[in-house]
Image 1 (tube, rainbow, N blue to C red):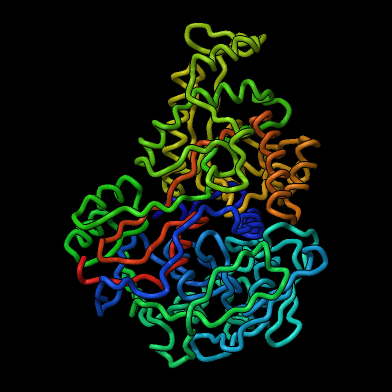
Image 2 (image 1 turned 45 degrees about the vertical axis):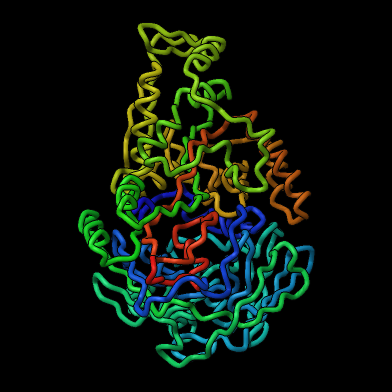
Length: 575
């Protein structure tokens, strides 16, 4: 099981998916090398499928019910959205041929390609798009994106035209259109509550670059769809387009067929067995293993480690409601300085993570280094600041002003089986604070109990977990005062009217310069408040043999995003 399979991602697994996707304007992506449109001239292709070993198993291969990382990887290959990720952080048309934006960003209209087909030969229509979004909005739907499209109305206005109307315009809405679309003609009559157990999730029919041809317990085989069904070819490549400049319709020539003849996913329960098969040459790549194991496997001759920069923040959350001890930035900052984050990254993530300087990844253009000042490990400074606030250290234990008993903390996290990385991070933080003189008890809980029973009810002191920031940060649901209500994601109980105004302004559509200025103001306020301790952004790691040609690194919001350039992947026989 990978760290994301049953990871809680706070209350955000449900309510921030739209945030992570809705406002995922591609300008926030780091530059990436554009994929080649022709095979490298100095290599010769291997005439066999690409073979990847995966730790874990797929359970539900559907855009509506995917639960595990293995599920999401397959969904990314079998299904398509209206748009898809492209090079240099751009978005490219996918099922949509073009789109337009009116009403100052409130209304988005997409026109589907005439040659978009499901793998069973049925045309993809606007009804499929509307069905998918309506399902995600259905009160009976309880999947991973159960509240992700709140505030959005979708309507099929023609056979191949679909319109989205937003209650509030949000900058970068186009990233939401990467949502994989499900086929209405196969699922519309299935009750929403029955979707997880429906046979479709075991034998899915998609409209993406690959179609499923074999589904066994430990093996899934994919092939390009028209090699299997005779469906229309998807044509030549196109140039990348900037989604922030899509007010005018965007033309979309047909997309290329993959260079790969097929993909085989081999699934394992035991990482040692997976590593052995890779080292024996029976696999071309390995995914789903912990970073330390990945680094060890990558030491195999003719192998290398791919580290995709992640956009999921591992952080410490404080309960800021009245009656708790974390009521001043000075105390929170002292606890921050007591954590050696570089040692944490080495110990828990085998070096495959980046220090977080704030709630926005430093690789994003919206990040402002001038106002997001770094916090270094400095327990002496932390001690000095606490003493300034009237704290006393007696027999090595800190006491709050006016208190005779040592100050203690219960630190919550998901349990080890739910999210091993978050659990290990919390163990590290607890040891760090205890060594600093604040006795800290770490309690790991099942993911559902952790989120629903403790975080969302405000029944905790401090917690460690993952926050899905996504490809463009909309921090409003995480920090706005109104989001402390039922269904909101402000689990820390923050109430700050000035910050509320800045968060509203930052999520509005605007030019790149306007958005940067708005986000600068937000980051400046967050630096003053230190409401959350941002620890790190973990990389998503994969091991590949040198024979695999084509993968190009870019920022990802989920490990499945690494297939953004799968059309260019090849197997070369001279490496």
